[in-house]
Length: 315
Image (cartoon, rainbow, N blue to C red; front, side):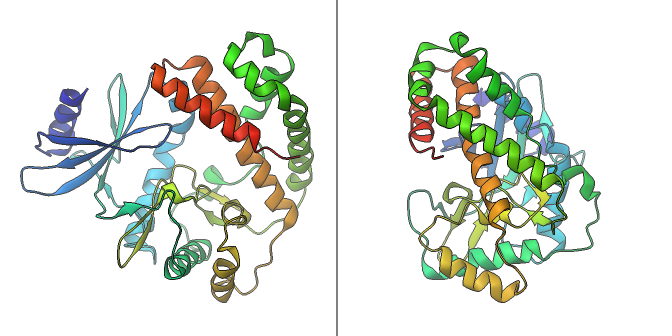
């Protein structure tokens, strides 16, 4: 695989390198640090087409990448998010029969991960999110990324729970069994909330939708927000929900509301996004365990992730 990536970098980006080091990636993609012949560093994100989740995650890739580039190049978020590198043919991605690759400038810092944000970093995060939410005059059609309060995977998850439970692997069934009624209850609540919100006239803004510590890189001076695959034109709660249970929520909201003084949390919308994320995580881990070709270690890791999500689900 490394030889393939070296070839892709040289042919598509004119980046010559023999120095590729694997980094800790997300659950759905691989990540590599690249050093070229001139000592410049890049970050390469690689989706494997063999994974069941890849088609879902890259479905809107040609929509979100130009938006992420615009955010970094033309808005107040310049220097606060990861910067895309185009191919020699001016594309934001390249792919072959096996991989989809996206190249970024490397950020010299560390992922927050299990660490806590400092007070200064919380302020920076609040400023970044508020600036994102206050953007206007978009040079793209917002309809293609607008929230519809519809999630296609919900029906599939329902079928797994209701009709096709016996077709799931034994390990998955053992994890799900004690919480089947709770999962069903949350699916029902999600359906009810979806119907209600589709009828409401809510204020939308540009949202990241996946703000968590593994998508934040910090160094001594700056905080950077990564992974914009889920960018959406949606209610602010699409971002606020992921910060709601953080210990720094009040500090975050104090600064956020200074920059967005008319905002008040909509508890119904907040609940919708909380349930959506929990059900999505459960669905995606079941999907990977059931259908992807995982090695023993990958299978064990994903099984533990699923257990964590199922154990913490609340009605």
